[in-house]
Length: 347
Image: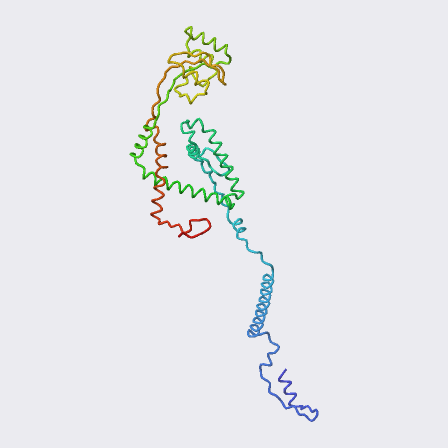
């Protein structure tokens, strides 16, 4: 068809506006314009399609990513994660601390021990000869009361009060001073010092009359006379005393040894006129009526060295204290610069 068209143009040149169209030799490939698509054409369209798909996918992915990034993110919770991903660990079982056997009382969180009660008792001289078991309940109450007061005073801030601090400081100084002097004096006092001091006391001792007696205390004079008649008739004195006497602190009526100064005047005057073994007539005192029997008479003797040793040591300390203080002054080189209260310097 193209060839025919070319021949037609050659045979009949067309005129138009004085333009002559020369015959053109077209390439042969133009003839295949109406043929099916070639492989190279197919490749071109596939490439375009795939490229378009990739571009659209990239746009979609980017849009999704930007949307997700724009969403608010929860604050990470470490503890929550533990709860979600790990089973909670069981709480450790804390065993209560056992209370020691020597703890006898609790005041809040404060513990009171048997040793504290014993120490408290030991600080009371009057209780040294009393069995600990006998005074323990009362002493425990006193220790608890002291602890309660101490805790209350601390809560109120009393130990921090200026006046209290001053008193504590003064007491502390006195205790330290006394302890130091005691050590110095103990070192300076010998056994010979005590023996010499005891010899002085024995030499100065003046013996006195001493009587051992027993009595029956009655409420009326008539009761006393009837009891005296029974005794004179041979009744047992101890039995009647335990049966009738109002003085329950004297088993069998026994009074032990005593001097005249140790008894009330009415009783002493009557008894010290009696002889050993003699029964008295009824003696009236503020306590009632007494029937007295003298069991023994003797002269008092000086107390033993051992029984007086503590008192002797105290006396020796009092005597040696001025010497000890003088020695300390000389050792420390004491100089008094103003001996008068008005501040006048020494000459």
